Length: 139
Image (cartoon, rainbow, N blue to C red):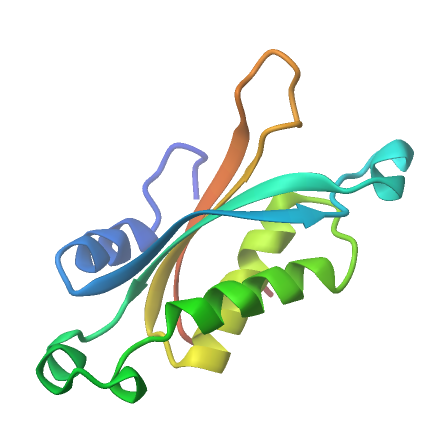
């Protein structure tokens, strides 16, 4: 694939936008993140945005949390996963989150954005955004 070609995930993202979804925006997580030696010794903030396809009609009708995607549990899990070990690249973090959220919470399609505001001094932030379906693998 050429670097400027649109991947199949672009169609997945359009599907996600045109369906019911749950969004978590700006989840701040202190993480050991970076490839430089000095970065491996400190915690830096990451900001996580998730957009997860989720059928909302059933929980809307029942009013029951058991029918809904528990976004508090998702947020706590994402924080725990990121803080469980050091990461080199934000790309690693994004792929890990996508795989874990799909597996642990039964999300079929999601978009993950990981932003690292400390990456470039003259930029507000650097980020990576991925769209994945359950069962997608980085390998």
